[in-house]
Image (cartoon, rainbow over all chains, first blue to last red; front, side, top):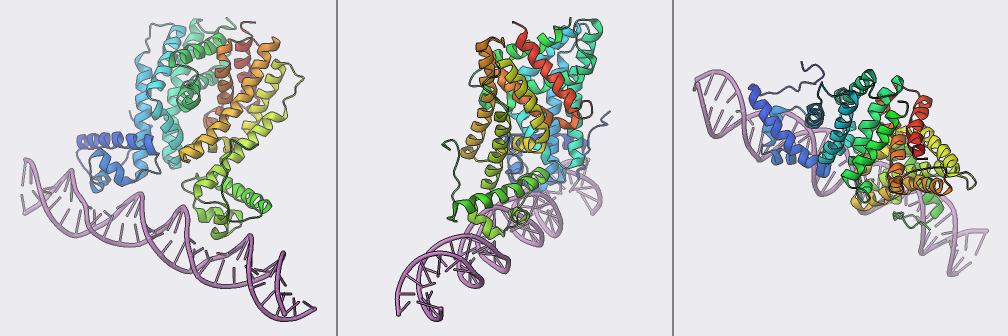
Length: 210
Length: 210
DNA sequence: CGACTACGAGCGAGCGCTCGGTAGAAGTTT
DNA sequence: AAACTTCTACCGAGCGCTCGCTCGTAGTCG
């Protein structure tokens, strides 16, 4: 099952305890990382924020970097679940895409600080761990690729097959851009306006050959 | 003239020397920051890389953060110059846009590591300095806004006036995304393909109401 | 008692930055 | 022209401090 996930060793034996404590750690770390960034947050602060002593915290991770990895994994899982939730077999490709893109925009809106965090801190991971995080990012992009392909098959979407991958990336980036360019966009658009206008950018393209 | 630029004090008096040494510092720092990131690079390393002693380097800056600011400013100036270069008064809005978007894509391609750097490290600046950097980012976006407005005026581009700002941001983000999602995109597209396909995404939209 | 989890003072490495000193150019006095 | 003074850029050992992480000990439960 969990093939593309890096397993972080723990001194503690009880798996349920591990999961619970790591959840604590992630939640505390997210709060701090979004506020101050990874490098400016100390291990002592993380421990305090999640209600553990440093000693105890280090029973559940090996390095500070592990915390960042857990955080990245958590964020990606969160986003992925939200996106998978609304996907139904019965929808046409086009309907599914419309739903999912909208879902993406509003998810990014709610998860804004988390999206920004993952954008800015992934590079602080070692190559090994970054690989896993980028893999997950790609899996999320693939969600949209699949939907596009479905629409291509059932004729509800028309697009050059060689552009499918690119369009999937475009959708993700246009979605996430609401998070990482929020400082500029928020002054001119609400999330509703943003959603509507960007949807039209995406869908006019997808019908232009139909 | 230089109103939106933060001036970093220097102990040294000679302005020409300041400029020359800071150029050295920026060049050395860029090499290191793109490789290791800002936080993992030490001041000693920067000094060594640019051929100054730490003591001397600190005659030209006040803090390590100043170096990052100088680097960000350098990158933005570089990009802005490239974009301004190809803009001619005589072109129609549409021609100008086509040229400039293409120019953006290929500039981002060449400046890839720099674009990624500015994306990832801007947040390491203090609020004060970040303000200046984001301002510059916005000015660069405005280049495209102006072109779009010109096209709207001369009738060569058709777009909802309220979407102009957004479209300018879209163009910038789609350009820069070639840098920060290179790890995925490079496996499927060359820069030429990328440019061509993304241009069609942008321009089909801009003609759809025409 | 043995197995396991929690604790936090403390270690040692490494960091950003300073500051007293040097060399030599520029200016001034004799 | 020589001697002295001032100014300026350069230097790097070292200061003070913070960081990530460890490990000996204490507490708890079966």
